[in-house]
Length: 88
Image (tube, rainbow, N blue to C red; front, side, top):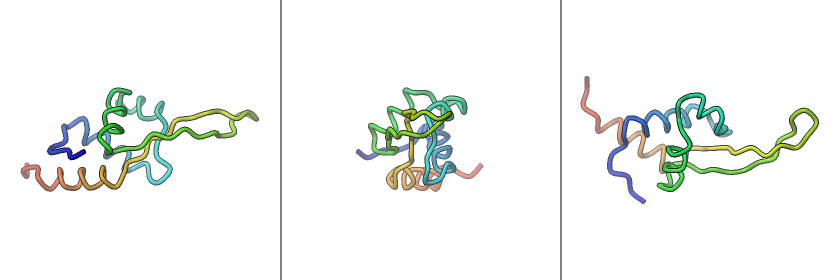
């Protein structure tokens, strides 16, 4: 799916994911940074991010966590949108 222009909220969410690196970010971390579940779902459905479930060892127990990562399409959209924005 092609995204013509990113909203300010989408740009901020994608920039947060881009800065998270290859490991991505957990949903609770994104929510704490102001990226809500509806925005995460929208980015995933538009192909700008992926959502994967992983098991991690925490406190001696296996816990399921959801990791969100920016896709190459998301990086391209973020870069393209930044270049399209007028200079302030």
